[in-house]
Amino acid sequence: MLDAFTALSRGTRLVYTPGLRRYVFLPILVNLVVYAAMLGYVVANFGGWLDGWMAMVPSWLEWLSWLIWPLFVITLVLIVFFTFTLVTHLIAAPFYGFLAARVEAQVTGQEPLDDRGLIRTGVDAVGRELVKLTYILPRMAVLFVISWIPVINLVAPLLWLAFSAWMMAITYLDYPMDNNLVSFRDMRGRLSSRRWPTLTFGGWVTLITWIPLANLFLLPGAVAGAVLMWDRHYRDLVPARVPS
Image (tube, rainbow, N blue to C red; front, side, top):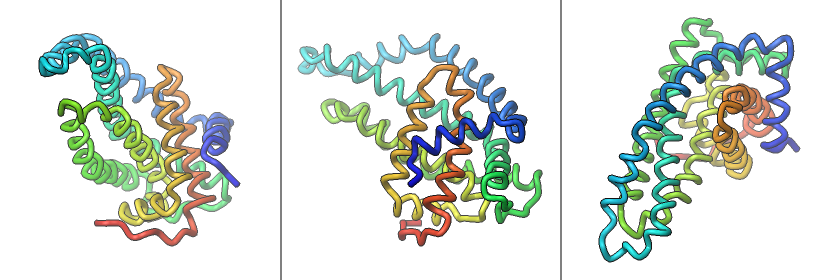
């Protein structure tokens, strides 16, 4: 039985073998540039964001400031994390899609069903990321609104953490599925049908993304791990019905 942690471990070792490691350098470089730019922006503005947020706390809740302040910090960090993740994956999507295809060919001995060619695959990968954004951003917006509602926002960090696991699962497991011509709706149905492997995989990937700098070198392994999960858990699965 292939579990999420094993898939990520094997995937990380796999992408740095001689046959595959040449495909990981460009994604790492892209992520490094975005990481540096966003880190500088966040460091320059984080204090102002936090002060503005704390100013919105009603006076009758000031006695809970010792609890509200760290919750606000956690929520703000999670929002920044989501923004960074969406930006980097939008830019790196063509590279990750190609890496997933090479991993699948090496692991299974068969090429993915996708025969669109390198350039068309890269263009379509960006389009697929935009489809993901249309799914993810409205849900992020709801969580963002919840994060600003007094009292209710106390549970916002937990909601963000749960959503991050689901979002990471969608982001990475979609690469091999897109390569095998699985529609976005079908992909969501397959993930829903295997909810435990899906959420544990997404949870481990979320944890990886929080390791500063090291995450740049571990995330290509998550792409390979997603291919292993696809081949073991989702390839022959009849997906659950999900709303369009």
